[in-house]
Amino acid sequence: MHELSIAESLISIVEEEVARHSLQNVTSVKIKVGKLTAVQPEALSSCFELLTENSSLNGVWLDIEMLPIKGYCEDCRQHFELERPFLVCPKCQGWNVRMEGGHELYVDEIETE
Image (cartoon, rainbow, N blue to C red; front, top):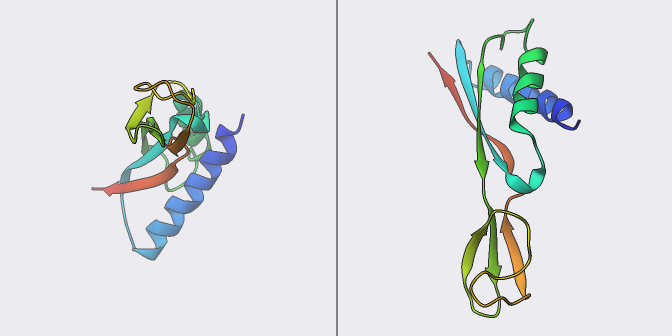
């Protein structure tokens, strides 16, 4: 389960930002996660909750936004979104496709009271 190590990294990032900007009373952390990362949102939330239980981030809500898989077809010059990582253009059925999104995983926002 790679969600545990991801949760550990997220907590480190949030703690660094909280210290750097002298933030107090963090209420939520918004992250963006690409669908190609294979992150299971429920598992990540559970790991985050467990790891923050006895810390200054106890009770902080982890808001996870899943980002779509995005591609670009070099043949018909179309940008598109996919539900699954099939490397076939949905417009022209061409195979000359470049992935442009879906691997993201980052802290987007830290909310405080």
